[in-house]
Amino acid sequence: MKETYGFKTVPITLRESYSASKNGWSALLLDDKNCKEPYRSKKYDIEIVDRVGGGDSFASGLIYGLLEKQNTKDVLEFAVAASCLKHSIPGDFNLVSIDEVEKLVKSGGSGRVER
Image (cartoon, rainbow, N blue to C red; front, side, top):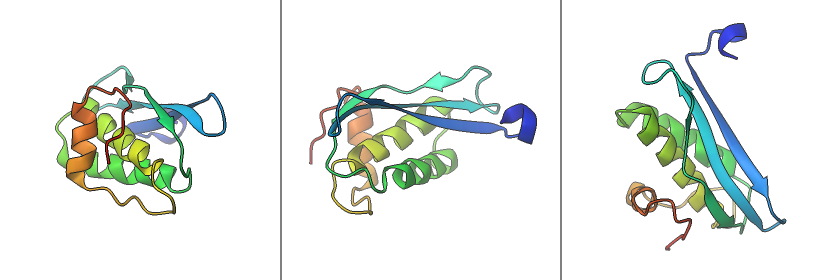
């Protein structure tokens, strides 16, 4: 994508399917502005309530992170945590606050979702 289309930032989500309701969830981000090697986020083992909206939550978390965070690590960790939390909510909308996402990021990636 970088070579063919000239993208400067390339995110990729990584889902490991253990079962229909249990997945591993992480992502990679290559961001020329902050690093030359892809950064891989912490991996969360999640119990899925609803996958609908998980990609949108990742994308919106990534956009927020690119606007508000200072480095590639913080950008990606915020996006992955936002998406991880969305998987625990039924329906299409991520109903969590920025503080809830930050709390999960700071938990060290244990994957334990506190709501």
